[in-house]
Picture 1 (cartoon, rainbow, N blue to C red):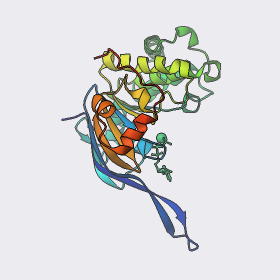
Picture 2 (picture 1 turned 120 degrees about the vertical axis):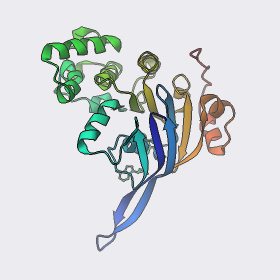
Picture 3 (picture 1 turned 180 degrees about the horizontal axis):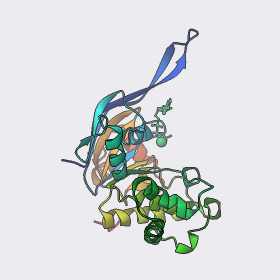
Picture 4 (picture 1 turned 60 degrees about the vertical axis):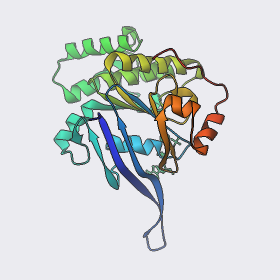
Length: 267
Ligand SMILES: Nc1ncnc2c1ncn2[C@@H]1O[C@H](COP(=O)(O)OP(=O)(O)OP(=O)(O)O)[C@@H](O)[C@H]1O
Ligand SMILES: [Mg+2]
């Protein structure tokens, strides 16, 4: 069985109300989407703005309730999970957002931000928490000298590394990465992507990697799900999607890549 199994999920948002206050319009953000993600695997979800990529990621983490469909993570039914079970499941699935400036609390030191999940989910004492945070910051390439600093004192790339460290504290099996490098300077994007890839190899992490830019996924993804208008239009291995795209929509996305990215020598 796969680590994550998403089956036939749909979600509509109401977009307006008529003069009597009745819901009048609906956006079909996600329509009948199914996919699987194996342990240690990276599935990229690509597509233009509004395709429904982030909604899929949020539904998987149960931050949004779908209208229909089922989600199984690590053998457990996510939608049917009791609050206690959901709490346990949430340790195993974490999220990294696009903009680390808004995902990290500006009033929390780096130490406190990375230690927070340990405070919430474990009974480790302060000393052990600090030791864990030091090791995590080391793993993501941020020195212990940043422990007492605040988000405003770090660059976007450094902050995203901190957000990655925070996502790793509870040793998750999967991370939903929603455009994790889109807000970063082009010069640091590949560094952060390479870090994510190395962590994936080292820790056996699975990624659901939401990205609108096909050029960025080649170094990290194993398989690709192409979405448009809330639906899956095509899915396949990175090689398939890059070299033998079947759908016109995918071909257009590929044509929009300015410079072909050489295949990394990773696998
Ligand atoms: N909370 C919400 N209320 C109403 N409509 C929403 C909500 N969240 C998303 N939508 C709509 O659902 C559709 C899919 O949105 P979603 O954010 O999943 O797209 P996306 O593929 O992540 O786009 P982007 O690349 O711009 O991040 C869009 O039409 C969006 O306007
Ligand atoms: Mg999005």
